[in-house]
Length: 312
Image 1: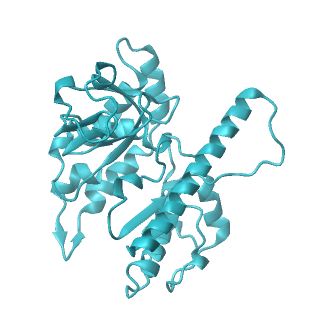
Image 2: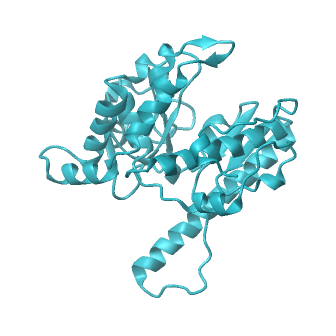
Image 3: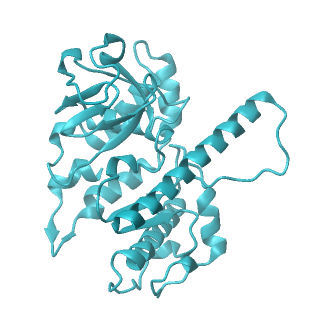
């Protein structure tokens, strides 16, 4: 939404004064809707339409109004990550290129923003794949490709949630300075008894593999930043404010913040209270992480973004 409305933002003193009107309010209206059920239902019965197609149409109708990747600004760059189910590699969708480094890249892709977002958020197996047809002749070769020129991989991409490959989205920014990571992924849960049913065992094994992948990404982030001397801040939905050095004017109550770490990640209706608490918590943890590591002289905030749903 920020990418779609960037050109309409009015900046004054480095602050977008109409950010809430252009970005916040449309997103909050959208998050009151039942998106995944609608996409699954209509995508299952409409001829010639997949669930991914319907999901992209919902995004376009409710949020983006036909905006394409080519309508996005040159700066800042907005990158949408998806996972290619055919190659098992990360796919980057942005204004300047569509890239899968096992196939190559397509410069200046003519793809709707809604399709890129649908692919990035197509949680498997229900909402994926999102099928993206591309011009086979538009691919350009790059060093290290293994499927360049292969029509089996270069005509249509079957994409799923970017988190299947990189749940923190770190690979896209692995050579940036000043990196801020906001991790809203559900924390891994311990189970005192192992399930004996095969489907539950399979899901548990997948959860373990996903948690291990996220753990490796986080350790790599910390190690690379330390070795290179680059600055970064990491904030997680299950974080503990007491572990940060930045001074705090606003305090939090764990009884209010702890349940937010395990809140559902579906595209179904979120109440105003749920939205307000999530906004406050994400803002709070990101602020304290940034002031601890990137902006140590910044003043501690004294008001919540959503005062009705304060977490103290």
